[in-house]
Amino acid sequence: MKILKEEIKFFLSTCTYSEHYKNTISRRLDDFVKYLVEATSDEEVHLEKIYETISIDGDSLFFSPLDTELVETYLTDHLHKSFSWLEETKRSLQSFFLYLNRKYDFPNLIEMMNFRVEEHKVKPTPEKKYIPTRHDLLKFLQVLLKNSSNLERDAIVFLLLITTGSRPSEILNTKVQDIDFVNETIYRKKTKNKSSKYIILREGFGKNLQKYIEKNNLTEDDYLINNNGSLMNLAELQKIFEGYLNEAKLPFSTLHALRHSFATIMAESGAEIIVIQQLLGHKKLNSTNTYIARNYIRNYGMELQANREIYCHIKKFKIDGQ
Image (cartoon, rainbow, N blue to C red):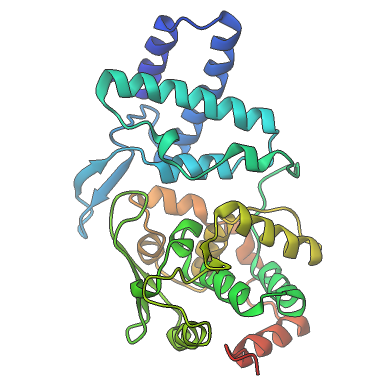
């Protein structure tokens, strides 16, 4: 396989679509290339060399190909754009991946992903990507604690996202059998990048999960976070997230943005960049650097009465609701 830009050029020169549709595909694929260039810090993006695994000494060990996780992240990060943009992007990528599948037996990632464009016909249109700050997250949790109709489930899922930096799909796909309550970890045997991962829980959070599971009579095969027993999808959780953001009078944001918030707060707290990289599950250190919003550090150490109150509520929060 050639580098991505060359493959796209050859694909467009050989396909039999109308010139108008070719121009549309060209624009959407060009947007995707720019995104991958930023994510990989490499102008010559190669789809079979998106992720780099390095040793503890910093030596390159091997590369892994593009996966559905990154494609879904790309679409999720652009939910603020029009429905037509999302639809055009999905169709363009699908046509291109179909070409790659036929030519190189490269997997058609669009057919494999869980993201559904039709679930995002109505979207907010913020001027720029918004990453919740430490104070914003406390305000968000305060609204959640006061307004949630399913407090235990909502508190658990959002505290897991905020305190572990996990991908939303990793939390939603977690089953009871994946949780180690003693060592306070969640083992994901296979993530979207086809590798296993341990999610490290905050100290004491394992006991909260155990109480929640016992109270709700969840079995080993049940999903930890579910909607009336069924697997909750990303669109459902995103809608819940947006509802609390609106109540808290905070700007629109995506679930994926909470990974950026986690990385920023970890950096503010003095964590080493390589530790943040491992917790996020990034292959490249450069990717981790892009997740840290340096300008938020100026607010480090600031304390507000509202913050102290929400900390107090969280510390006292018990799964039994008492």
